[in-house]
View 1: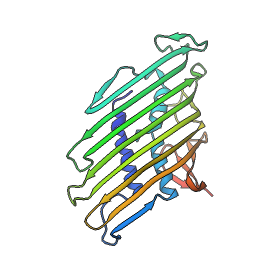
View 2: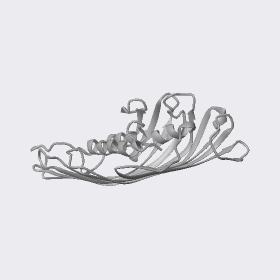
View 3: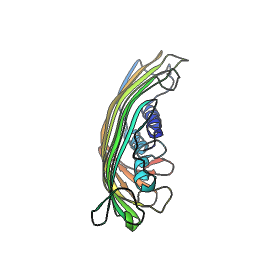
View 4: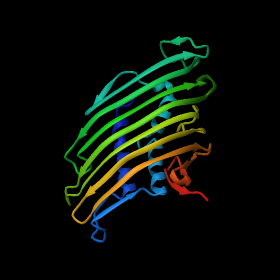
Length: 255
């Protein structure tokens, strides 16, 4: 498990800020604004949780689909604790001490990143994360990995801008369940071709600034269906359906 995966989760935090309206205060805003996320904002947040580049579940899917690169040792970066446990077996269920490209057919994979990052930079002050995955991977000898399991991102984030004293904080809990996610191991990007992810995202976002105080609640469920063409359909609360480009993260509402 690569230690920088937890650092990349900071980018998911930024996605929450964008979805919730993070940024500079405007004098035209009301003194107090409270609202749930729109369907589009919900879909954008789900797209961020899928993104490999943003440290989402796509990173772990790509990792287990390339088992020769898996790392079992625990390591740390800053105040983070990173660990991974991996078990291998062949198509007959026989345990293997190490991965063998010719015979390993089954992997049980569990990873965990916990800890806190603190900095005086404008970007963020405090970020506490609990980020983990538990996957079962089958069919490796066929060239197509079938992945089932669960993934979670839980975080608490505080940022205070040095140029205007705005303070942003949020608590976020994202829990995913993967079912029949199929990945072609021979591709470089390891974007799933089939399968579904069901999940929930809950939390709160608060921004206190000179001109406006904003509070938004995040609480919705969603279903992701991989379409086999580097896109996925995202259905969020209210049955709104969106398409996400898994290469770029761009989200568009479908008819």
